[in-house]
Length: 203
Image 1 (cartoon, rainbow, N blue to C red):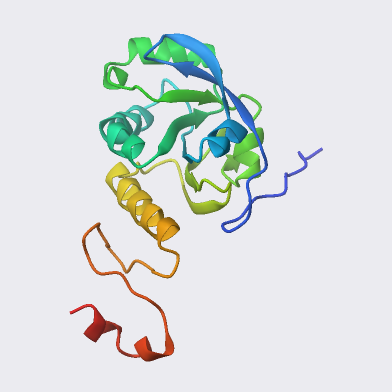
Image 2 (cartoon, rainbow, N blue to C red; image 1 turned 90 degrees about the vertical axis):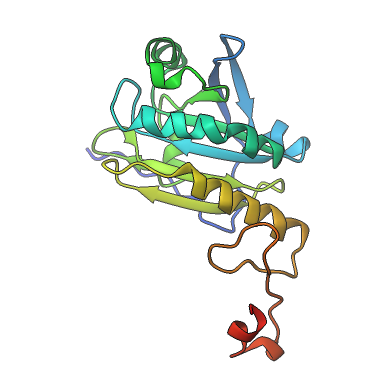
């Protein structure tokens, strides 16, 4: 009998409240992450799903995320890596894998895959998560979602760039950010006057 698939939350929709068991590498303790708590604190939530601990591309991604963690925190974001492993496996992997020595964000355990399923990042054949990146704004709305096959790693620098753009437009809802936008560069204010003249506006 095939496994019944969960209804997927899509961009622009509110993410249903969830909790995740976590391993905190800084405190070397287990705990829990609650989306409700993050929303009460008016924080962004960044979920970086990956297939499995003790694999190959995954530690390179998590190391890159560790390098960007402080910058993301300054933007008001709660960062979690997430896989379908348990918190115990996270603890053992982080202690053993040298690439993870600088990880300071919490590692979420979606052991039954329910959150990955709800976000469309679950591979029902393997029981593992895809490489999914999800940005939830302080109102609980899924602002950004990216899902990749597991054979290619992500560049977390692009996650930082997108997070900065989302943070800017959240505070300035009348503006939109063009391709490759970075803080300090021109944004756009859509109107009938701008139609066909975007190139002129960005000069």
